[in-house]
Image 1 (cartoon, one colour):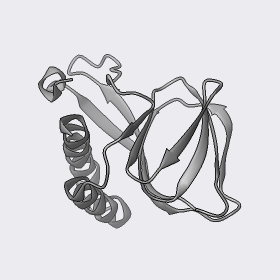
Image 2: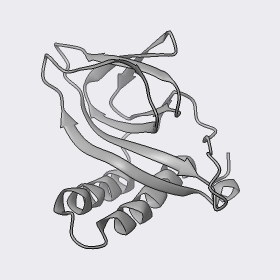
Image 3: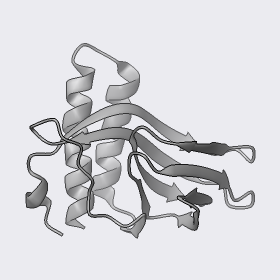
Length: 149
């Protein structure tokens, strides 16, 4: 896959969280109106996506496209820590775009990805003027880095 094939991608960040799961954490079953693009830093979680079950582990990117049915729960003896970003992926013409990624892709621990996500966390939680524009730029860097691994 080539990141250059997606040079017209315009991500819009709708939600961001650096999540450190508790034993009670779960995602209730629902069809999502956004793309879930999550990087697992530590631990594990069980995801059910369109009636298939996946185990997400440290170093995994979880890619759940817009319109998918999603549900998840933690693994109690190995609680997940992750960076979850909910995005809308569109092209320059405003058309929805799906990335050519598997539901789970292990990219290992990537310092550059973590650096981008730390910066996105600062921008998102700070909510200073222009934060959505900065978040969009960081989302572009995040996607480009993941697709280049």
